[in-house]
Image (cartoon, rainbow, N blue to C red; front, side, top):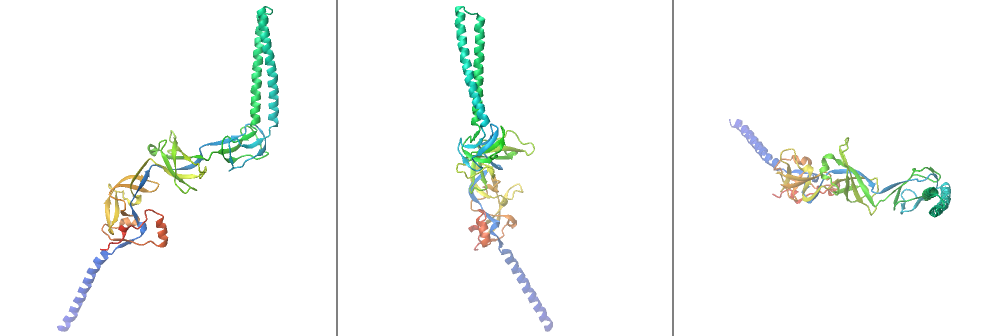
Length: 386
């Protein structure tokens, strides 16, 4: 009996030891910290938030002139090229003026003749009035002299008009810049034959540009003349600001968009017409606690975030305010304070009460993280010393 009892006792002791080891392993596994990357957290910041409809469009010159030929003829000279700055009155091109000059000479001769005829008609009228007063001629002779004088004065006025037109045409053979600016386009070359109305140049004033964009019809309540517009553009290393100058009075039936224009000062000449811009109308602006919009669960009746506090995950109900659709940030009016750490992405699925450790970023990740204001490792995200 002793020999049989010993193996059974040994088996019982082994089973008990295994059971105790398994019981100890379960709490250890439960207390193990879950490691997440620094890109899975964001720190709530106190910052200025702008809210309003996003816009995209192009820059156009607020003042431009499409210069066309006023007279026809051969282009003799072109003095400027595209991209060249010009002052008001600068001669851009010369058109052959031979025929126009001859017409002006003829018109001057016509004025001279008409002036002499008008003077003679006036003298005849005065003489006729004197004779009729003396009873030397009939009244009808005075009436005839008056008609002759009127005809001569009309002929003089017509001659002067012809001369004025001829001299204007002569001046227009020299094509000049209407204002100071930059030649944006040149459409002619020496030797070209132009007719009245032919396009020759486009001159723009780069000191003032405008954004031509559109907004959804549903956002029209936030778009008013005078409202500020903030935007970025390729080639500029900073955010720029302008103001809405025009809101179209009707909605585009196909796109359901409303066209708007905003003036943009450009005294430094940083911007050029034709660039693509993106930005927003700053309908509302205030300072508040901001978090990335992806940190907030808005699927239920009450919005909430997963906050990391003292190394543990907790669920916090929040109330939201303004939204910045362009920056994808949202204002939290209650539930969070500046400096609180919230979870992002897949980390939002971590259960409440789980201990979380934020891993140190790699060199490549650190560079990427430094470029994002929301991807930092706060002190509150370090593992608890308890």
